[in-house]
Length: 307
Ligand SMILES: Nc1ncnc2c1ncn2[C@@H]1O[C@H](COP(=O)(O)OP(=O)(O)OP(=O)(O)O)[C@@H](O)[C@H]1O
Image 1 (cartoon, rainbow, N blue to C red):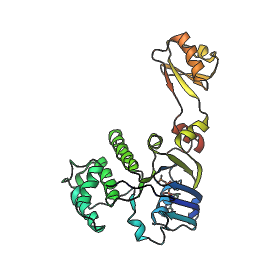
Image 2 (image 1 turned 135 degrees about the horizontal axis):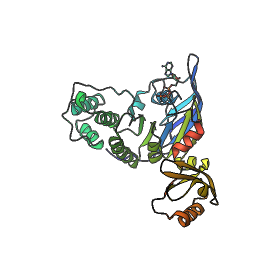
Image 3 (image 1 turned 45 degrees about the horizontal axis):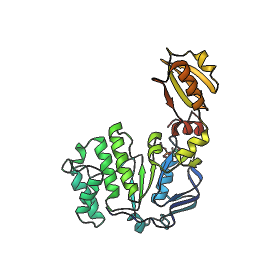
Image 4 (image 1 turned 180 degrees about the horizontal axis):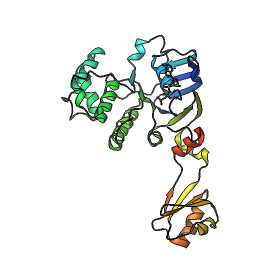
């Protein structure tokens, strides 16, 4: 695949978009811009409106009101010129299941008018080169997911839309796919993806939009969302070295609880607390945990909004 030149203008511009299904206001006044070359995440609990939003970007659904612009054009009514420039992997990707992985990709490639070597390149990109002759039906879940992404990439798109690309993958396959996605980004492609994995969004995304009940409730880089949260650092000390009472008495400790074999101290002055812990208990086996995107997400959505 060739490297994509960063072009001026937004890859996706969404302006005050609404979409209702009967009484359900699935997307309720969403505005956002995805920059060219950006890795953009859309997060939110089930039913937040993520898929509906992506489907409007893909041109699969018409917005009730507002405007959607993709690579400078409107995706609706169905814009076939735009389809050539977009790669789409949906939650239920369709395969020619009786074909082998390579036959499937060559068939898709033919639909785009591509030469057979496009299939080889796509397979290589997702690391499936050892499985070209296995029937789609016989691929593992992770391998199918990679094939779905290869299918989305075969025509060398500028914009890639991935709806939960690592859903149902084991941790190893998920990490392997992160590598594929990072490679795509390094080539200058714009990637928009929805995910239920907050660690994945934190590791991959330049910015994330958090949706709840059809609206965007936060939009920023993971680092900024975490910083704005002002969440405490947790210092974990083996419980045989310090008591909860002694931990609570440390200057800068906001809270301390016994959790299994550890006393967990919450603090917004981690340096000061660590020095004190070092003096009381020594720092051997002491661990610190800083806030993650998951903490920011739970704070923003309320803990009842589980992913
Ligand atoms: N075709 C449809 N007809 C009627 N209601 C729909 C349709 N598609 C989605 N909805 C409803 O619209 C709301 C938003 O759904 P959507 O699938 O966009 O959310 P989501 O954030 O992608 O959820 P998930 O994480 O479960 O995929 C939900 O209340 C859902 O039940």
